[in-house]
Amino acid sequence: MGYANNIGKYHLGRTIGEGTFAKVKLGVDTTNGQYVAIKIIDKQMVLESNLKYQVQREIRTMKLLHHPNIVRIHEVIGTKTKIYIVMEYVSGGQLSDKLSYVNKLSEPEARQVFQQLIDAVEYCHNRGVYHRDLKPENLLLDAKGNLKVSDFGLSALRKPGDMLTTACGSPCYVAPELLANKGYDGAAADVWSCGVILFEKLAGHLPFDDRNLMVLYKKISRAEYKFPQWFTESQKRLISRILDPSPTRRATILEIVEDPWFQTDYIPSCGYVHNENIYLDDVTAAFDSIEENKADSKLPKTSSFINAFQLIAMSHDLDLSGLFEGQDDKKETTRLGSKLPVNETIKKIEAAALDVSLSIEKMKNNFKMKMHPKQKLKMIRSSRSYYDLSAEVIEVAPTNCVIEISKSAGELRLYNEFCKSLSSLLSGKSYESSQMQESKVVNINSKSTNEIECSEVKHNKDNKDIRGYSSS
Image (tube, rainbow, N blue to C red; front, side, top):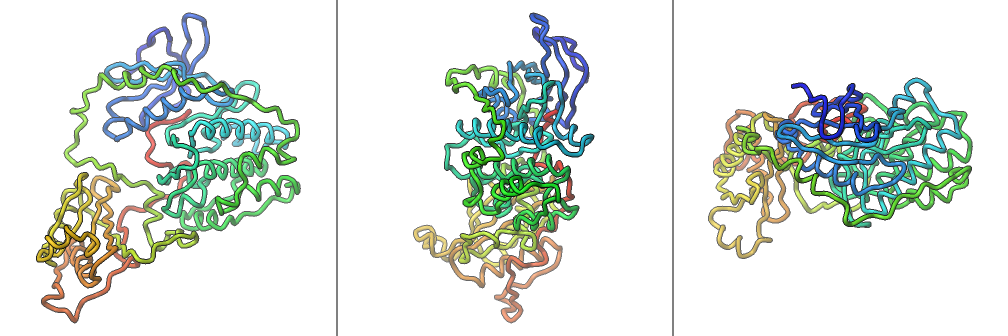
């Protein structure tokens, strides 16, 4: 479908960026002749992909931020089928484009861009905003070479000190603690990404890069990288403090700003005081006209849709959480792959529970269920700690799921029997419970070869969490 030549007071021109669900066009404000960038998002595609709240979050976040090194949103216009986000036009393009033809930046230029990046990130953090996808593709340059941070689609809004849990970002720039499948500090994660960007600008290549994702993440978790011979001692010292795999030892923004190399020719860029009364009504109104009922799919939608980082962290062979502290050794966990849709997978779980005489108690979201021995159901409800076995279905693709089975209390034998029964049903093989053949009970644990039988996660420098649109 084409686009109108005009929307509101803006005249639409050529396309300057394009993504899966959006195009970015050059526009002109007909009232003053000012150039703008207009991101045009397809409402139906966003809704069908469960990205409505991600788009709303990006718009709200960018409207709340007013800093010379952050792309500004002027207004949001909604029609029945499209959302038009009118933004500041940044004529210099992406930093990644510049790096592609100059290879690396000079020290003064790299330092200036890094100083502006740190100023912008500090401004965000002081307002509880954590970007979580900082990389050269999301850093724009204006005609004078000044930096503009863009694409807040994966950002999080939290109070300082609150822990985040969603693992997202781009593989080569992601902080090691995100791979541990635990909570993490958004500020420390952003700082790590800034350090990777600084290294790349000075070196002309990434500090961590590999075609094999498992190898890449092991390098990141151990901070295995080498400085090029032309790096100065002051550059090495600062980058080493930033690329510390321990988030508690990693340099903070305040420590970075106080570093002598950073302070050279430093001119701080200050943002505006946050306006609590900023106009946000158009953000909600832009979505009001869409008929959400038409977006319903035959397959159930689940808020537990999995991304590449979670998938890797869930696999025993790839999980790097053992490199971090705070592991819970008491909880038994098994993960099985299902090549069936969610509804069919749930039926297999119910059948496996029936095989070993377990009763199922479905939770609110219908994708997680608890199981109890039938004959002890009443006693268990009055004493929850007696037996705690649960199964959760996580959708990887419309016909691929991961089933996470966990037991934190109760008899191990029943847990093992349920796991084996479900594994047999998923693979189409018959299963005899221990009540019929106890001598053949097999202990299934998280090292099972049946784990994660889902499609291969291919390495891509631009691989993201579930993305809806380009930031170009």
